[in-house]
Image 1: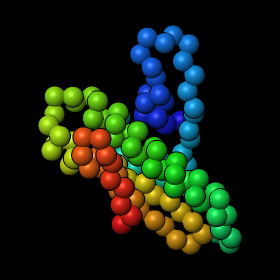
Image 2 (image 1 turned 60 degrees about the vertical axis):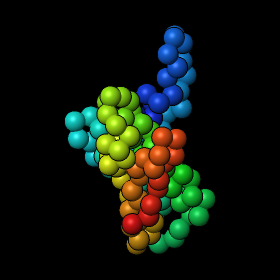
Image 3 (image 1 turned 135 degrees about the vertical axis):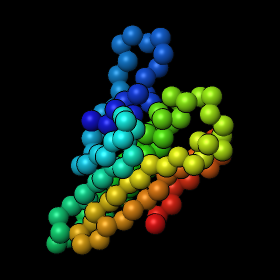
Length: 115
């Protein structure tokens, strides 16, 4: 289970809080920070378009949640320092691998780039 996603849904002061649980096919952590998240979107032979689209949407959600969680731990840091922080997503579809990089673009916007 992706811990940063779970933390991003917690509402302070609400005791019985229900959260959507998201799981990933692979996670790379450094000091508790979910740096890289992997999704495998189906078998090698055929692509399921709906599954692929759902997985890329999930990767965007999980990478932004991971960054948000990390930024909240260092609230005294400048916005410029926060912009240098990145989380990565890997999506495997059939015989292709796509790498995405998620970072903070501005105080209220994320930047997600396919590399």
